[in-house]
Image (tube, rainbow over all chains, first blue to last red; front, side):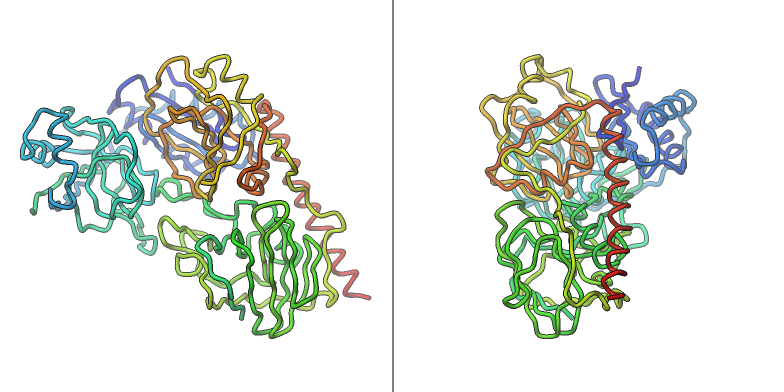
Length: 213
Length: 323
């Protein structure tokens, strides 16, 4: 059912994926992550997309014991529906920040306006946070827009770029390389190391985009 | 007060990094050769995780504007305080006006300059390390430019033996081929039998793109999977060895992204990350397979060695001061 592997001496990766992304598996991942993070021997419990990485100090704690504990917590955890917040991000589509809309339109067999309509009408969920500071993997993308990543990533994409890739949606929290396709831009600040809560998004948040241009 | 005289986009302030920020998408960061930073701090009687300067670009020069005890550890190159050469893994006391120069190392790739008291820069998300991707931590979230002035916290260790002191037997650095121990990772069995064997048999060359994010490696024969594999994004730690479809591995290092999606063949064990950090571009490495119990034993032996070194240096310093 689940697979647990070592990621060095001080980390374990629990993989619960079976093919495509599964919503209820993800809710269980969040719940298990919360329970594991509360254990004193766990330094961090990091939800991925249908998987969970736990990190600990192998000087003090035995990986075999923690694997046992992780498996037990997984078996014992039911999905708890914690209340989700709703976040709406204003987006300007097209132009300089939407240079990939024509490519996506050709891929999907849609007009450029239909691509924008499909993206803006989506109801998304923050499945995981990671890769770069404040980046959220948003599930719920219209499957017609599930274009593979670019064959070679762009060297630099600006902060605020609204992007899609690998069947997921996202927003660039900082200027960085990415292989995702760019549809538009938002002015919202997704990450600020000096804020009390650095990330705009929390796991499980429901996210919508609102077209402002 | 210390003034950096040589700027470089590669030289940054680092401590031991951020152990609890992956859920924010923030890398662990910290000194690539954490053992060398710890040693530099122990030589000065600092807390083991005090912030120092990671030097990757040479020559590197700093001017001391006040008397200041400091240490130079890590890569093995010529270091001079004014004209006076310093032995490797050594702590000394600079007088106001003196200049410390680090030349390109013959062996190793990263030197650490630590200061009694540790560098006084703000703690951001639990660490003083520079996060270049996020543009925070260290000195204003960026690398050290010429003219940057830094202060160290006050410290008792300022009354260090004026002759300086250090390790009689400096730390080992990889020579010729670095032997790096690793554990098979989640997708190890998804690689062909030939690729599994080749991974450990071939020598891998560190390419020019190697940096704090990752080390791209090259060898004669690329590695291949039994069949194509699509993975959902998952958390990855420094030491994770990913193999993109071209078949040449990338070892994730301190500033690596916290999530990735490429198949993982192995993980470098934590104490051996420093060997990679100290392997120069163009040099070669060999991966040595270990099992989990050996990896755990190595992590623990490393922690004990560092603890004992701290005690030995403390007593050596007291003996020298009593003379």
